[in-house]
Image 1 (cartoon, rainbow, N blue to C red):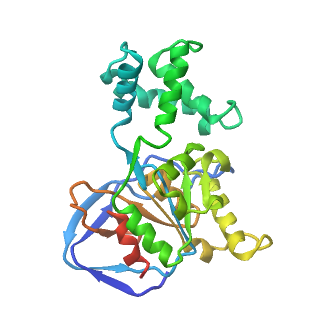
Image 2 (cartoon, rainbow, N blue to C red):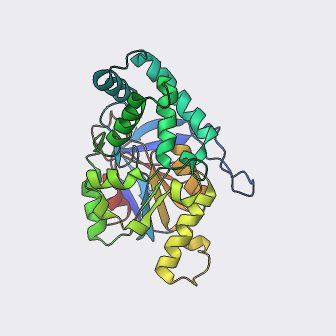
Image 3 (cartoon, rainbow, N blue to C red):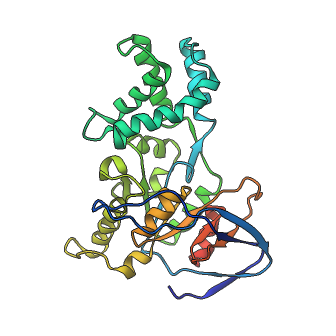
Length: 307
């Protein structure tokens, strides 16, 4: 994509040397080429960064991109279980160790939060909580704990990153179309409302894996999104978006495999959000050796898109 170059000071130049073990496959079973993953960072005082033209739309991941838990999930599970329900047989250390294991186990057994298998998405989370704490399924306290944790993670558990609102304000003022693509269930709408983010996105521009039927990094997930947005712009009979259109659609997220690799494999342009606690809120823009962009904060975006 040709565009005027941008010369920045204190740019973090990144070279990616080792390949990720993740695979991105289509529903036809075709493995997509991998991007490199291991990051080696050096600081330079001058580097040429491309600026992109106005995008067809910018898509955002949610968890750890726009918002994040106020405290660790295992700690919250432990504190609510012990302080509010006097469930004390599971230590914080055990929850820290077992929660990711149980999560992956339940997700493998019931992919995409049980879509099409379980009665509803909240049944998936109840299954996770019951297995994690090894509780009796029909016990009244069990149901109350499940209700409490599900409700807590429907809003009050999260905080918005400081760079989010200023960036969304600038993008909105410049009439940039904003989209959400997330591996999530319907609680997203409550979370966005609670965090005062819902007004930045049209309801029809929020794409959840639970609705789409595919999970990132599947190229089928990103194909559903780009084809829907293309028809919004050009009409229901517009057909399939071509390579040029796809290349001017941007997805931004914190997961290298689910966000960065997934969207690029689908023909989109990806921007990898790599928040750095040691960057002291500096806006660092980096380029990989295959001309893909990495940013340290969302506040880089107005500069990237010349807004």
